[in-house]
Image 1 (cartoon, rainbow, N blue to C red):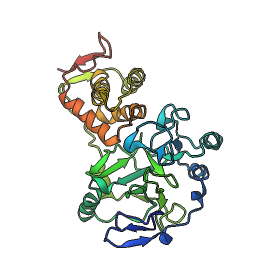
Image 2 (image 1 turned 180 degrees about the horizontal axis):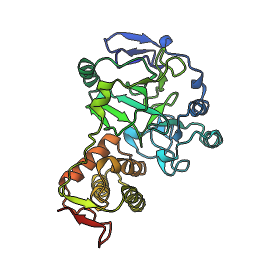
Image 3 (image 1 turned 135 degrees about the vertical axis):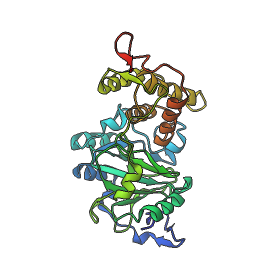
Image 4 (image 1 turned 180 degrees about the vertical axis):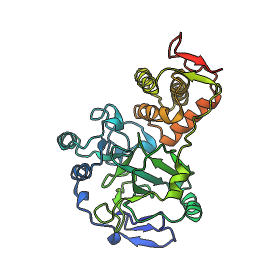
Length: 332
């Protein structure tokens, strides 16, 4: 299976072998009639949906300089908590698309929707990484597949249990819990639309399971992530630390490009992984939600890198925001 699918526009799209597929090969899926209709179709499948800013006259409807996130970030008035407000409630979705008829569609990934999505971006080297992975791990099975407006491909898979990394390598992201993908027939900033690939719409092919070799390659290790204080034992439950970290981060200012954005994101990462002593897998959803408030929002890959950087380079004491006394102790 190649990583590229037939796109709805323009008329021809390069395939992985250098040939071109005509637009007539793209499935004429009824959900393309309008994003509101498609959103309701996806919710009927149990996929949790959220409205994203759309593209009108070549610009993101947020009317801000959001760069590569144009047409991809949540409408804050509709979903204040970003992807965590994604829903299958038809009444809520009807109200959203009545108010924002040009909204693009986001589909939340992870256990709530029963979805894991492999996102291949050829502009970042995804095709080369994909070819190498297929040689090493075997071909991916037939499964619903989307051709994005930016020449990428989304492979939809049935959700597996367990913790996942956020990438397979250069140019290939893994969308899981706390993430989302832009879905057909949303419009890309390029002017093209997201489209189900030929014979790969969800009503034509069932969700496949990610093959075991691929799954093993993206699983997080079961062991705890080492920190600069590996013998530290925190007696505050993880769920409580996550709750407190979310509340704290909600009060922190957004990271704005050109105005100390990198430093702001770094500060939030340090607060979460050091101040509240959270491992990367627990920190990532908090930082992803924070990123939705930033201008422009950061990619999940960038957020994950910032978390890693904070874990490795920050000299802040572990758990300093958890309070004094018996909450933190050190193992013998």
